[in-house]
Amino acid sequence: MTQRTERRQFFGQAIAMAVAAGSGVQRVGRAFGQETSAPGGEPAVAKAKATGETKGMIPIIDTHQHLWDLTRFRLPWLKDGTPLSKSFLMDDYLKAVEGLGVVKSVYMEVDVEPAQHEAEADYVIDLCRRHVGPMVGAVIGGRPSSDGFAASIDRYKEESAIKGIRQVLHGGSTPQGYCLDSKFVQGIRLLGERGLSFDLCMRSGELQDGARLVDACPGTSFILDHCGNPSVREKDLSAWRTDISRLAERKNLVCKVSGIVASAAPDPWTPADLAPIVNHVLSAFGPDRVIFGGDWPVCTLAATPRQWVEALREIVQGRSEVERRKLFHDNALRVYRLA
Ligand SMILES: [Zn+2]
Image 1: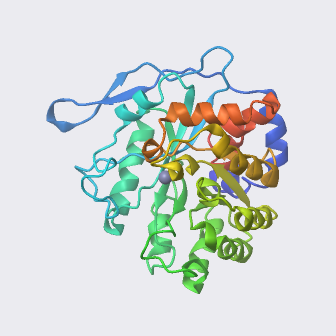
Image 2 (image 1 turned 180 degrees about the vertical axis):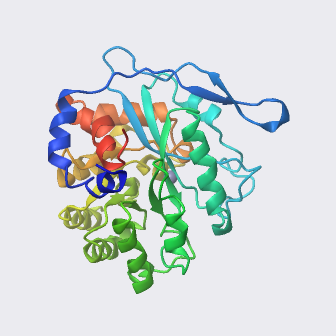
Image 3 (image 1 turned 45 degrees about the vertical axis):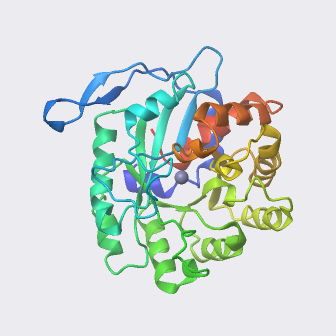
């Protein structure tokens, strides 16, 4: 089977893969390299302590790991003087997730200036190739409605580390309805033809637009980031609940359980504040269509990765081990085609 065919089949094989994955989770705890500074500014690979599995702990695939090196990239949305306005590198990530059992991760694009999309992709492809940290794949930034979009994704035709594309749709400059523009829809259809997925990250009030986009692109696989971005502080989640239930009827979409804890900032929070959101997406999407994401370092606005993981473990502790393994690990192998 060619890599292209494999990619196209990634949702089609959902059931078979889920059954297989439940019975044979791979060995984990492989040590991976760590990025360290070396003379000349070139990162060197050094053996590092893996954040591998502790006995009895379900291993984690973090499907939403950011990195930003502000000496290389400009992130126009980062405001000077805020907690996130510094570089976050692989070493920092490894420290932040130490002991949590993160065995694989997927890089998530960080909305760099579009002129830097290629440089961002090259940066993370290099990290994946050199096994710098647990990162094994990447969702890179792109502009599906741009004229050069087809050429921009064909650049990675032979690059197995590239799993999908994201353009965040919740930024202040992105108007409502943007994702239904015909050029945008064409670009998202093209992703399906090329075996790449699209991470859908949008304002919770616009999820119905998301459903229309998903319907317009039946050959494309979507991942809904951050449970559709509801706010933990919102008292009335009824509209979000209805929209999520409708979205979940689309079989070419899975839900990423990530991001929600940051919406609690700056107030203190408890797992009970997150539970209604998590439980609703788990029941709407079902055990085979949910994946875990850490959203480091954005999560640190409200929680360390450990606090987020422990809160989620607490919320799902009454579910079967098979379901918990699917959420934290197994489903991600299928959704992002991680070998
Ligand atoms: Zn994020």
